[in-house]
Length: 183
Image (tube, rainbow, N blue to C red; front, side, top):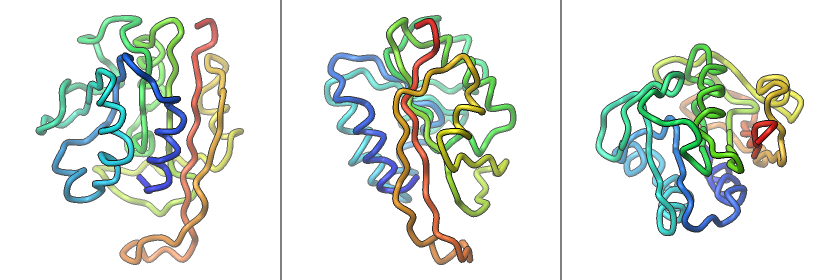
């Protein structure tokens, strides 16, 4: 996740108070503290102050509340969460539409989701990179399908790729806030 991406995601969360939030594909505390501490500082810590934040990941690590594959979350009831964050994970899974369907199921009637993914970014494993990229709102609309209404689209400013990627193009991420149709 890019620093600007974390800040945009927080802005799209609309300063919730007293909400239930599911953070899908969240990674554990060690990742935030070692690799990208700004994710905690700019996004997760501020969200967890006045809300019930639940971290879900397939890996059992400190900081993960629910160990589950987000493509099938039977331990989470229907209409449980006010908000779901699915950030920087779509490109790391096969059949991500199953996760989108499950997110739709666990959202409350007036709930919404915030999704983010690379717009342009080099291949990066964790453990795979399916090379799904979402350069614009049209790509998000196609991916999400007719079951979702995009209420806001944002993109980070292009920036230089990290030197270890050996990637000569600038990178950016795109972020959407959306809600299921009929919610």
